[in-house]
Length: 413
Image 1 (cartoon, rainbow, N blue to C red):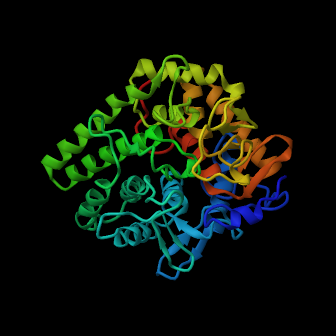
Image 2 (tube, rainbow, N blue to C red):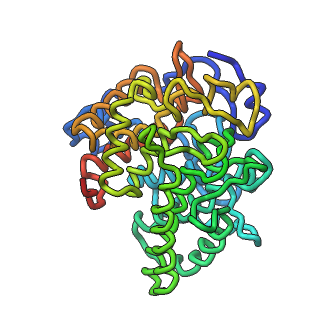
C-alpha cells in the first residue's frame, strides 16, 4: 500500500490509514431486527452498520452529538454534511431522531448571510465552506435539503419545518446552474469541488452528479412546501425538478449507453452517476433499463470485490482540481473501487437481471467480513481509510430497498 500520509495531511479531508486493518468481525447480528433476517449476509451487514455508526459518534464543541465519516480513528476529523446525511438516510434505525434534528439545525444556523451552506464543521468547531478550488462546495445546499427530508422520515414533531424552509430555499439558490436547462454548471475557468466523492476531480460544464442532487433537492422543496400549504413554491420546485430531468438528455451518451460526468472537462462515462440516476428515479423506464443493462453487461470494467470504480476501465479522469501524488491515476478517486456506489449499482443490476443485484451485495458483505470496510480499495492489496461509513451504509440502504423493508413504496419496474 502506498504511504501518502504527508500529502493527505496537507488537506483537511484527505488522510491515509496506514497498514491493513480489520477492526471487527460480525459473524452474527448485533440487533434484534437482524436476528430475524433470513439472509445471513444481510444480517452481517446490518450488524456492521450498527457498530460503525456507534463508533463514529462523538461529542462536539457546538453542542450536538456528531458523527465522523470514518469510525474508530482520527480520519476525517469533522462532522461532514454529506456523510452524515447518507447515514441518516440509510440507517435511521441506528441514529436517535434528536441527533438528526440537532445536526440539521446546526448546519442551517451556519448558512451564511449570502446563503452558503457549510460542507463540514471540524471537531474543534470550525465552520468550513470550501474544500478544493477556492469556491464553495456545490453539493452542500443539496445535501441540506436531503437531510431535512431524512429528519422528517425519522418522525416526531415537525414544528421546525416552517423555520428552516426559508433557509433551504436561500441556500438552494446559491447553486450555480445553466439557466436554459437547470443543470448544475461548474465554470471551466474555475474548477472546484462539486460532489464530495469526486472533490479532487475537475468535472466542469454541466455536472451530472450535482444535477441529480439538485433535482432531488427540488423535489424535496416541493414536498416541504406542500406540507406547509405553500402552493406556489411547491409548484415551482416541482417544475424545476422536471426541467432538470429533461435536461439530463444533454449528458446522455448513446455511444457508451451511460451518462457523461461533465460536458466540458471530464466528458467521460460516469458509472456512479448513471447508476444513481436510476436509483433516484430520474430516468424514464426505457432509459432506466438501457442504463441498467449496459452496467450489468460491462460490470467487469468497473467492479472489484463488490466495489465500484467511478469510470469504466481503462479510463482515468482527464483533469484534476488537485494535482498531487495522492490523486494520480490508480489512487483515491482516480481509479480505485468504492463501496459507496455498490447499492446504487445493485439496484440497477436487479432491474436488468433479478438476483444479480442481491448477489453483488452479498459479495460486498463477504469482502467486508474478510477484509474490513474501507473507503476504497484497489488491486494488489491497496486500501485506504478503514471503517468508512458510506461504504457500508449506502449498500445497506439499497439492500433494504430491494427487500422492501425500508418502509417506502416500491418503485415501478
